[in-house]
Length: 68
Image (cartoon, rainbow, N blue to C red; front, side):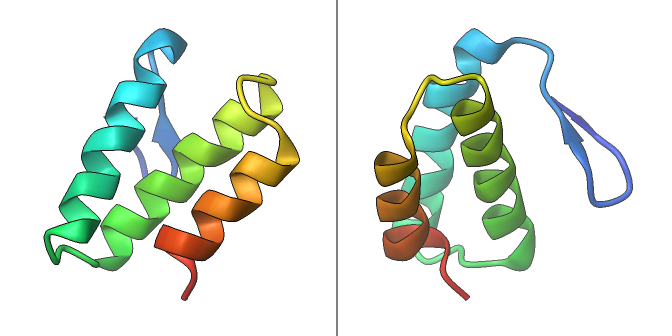
């Protein structure tokens, strides 16, 4: 993953589900920073756009972990 000004670029799409799992674990452990939320939503957006997940799965995860 490369970080730009508020934009995240992912070099390997196959690693995204694992990265998302780590971010969700961080958030469950109490790291609810804006940066964690933004990285998680960015990964979810990529997974939705590449059809790795459907809209229902996306909305469920956003509501549970990334809702502001």
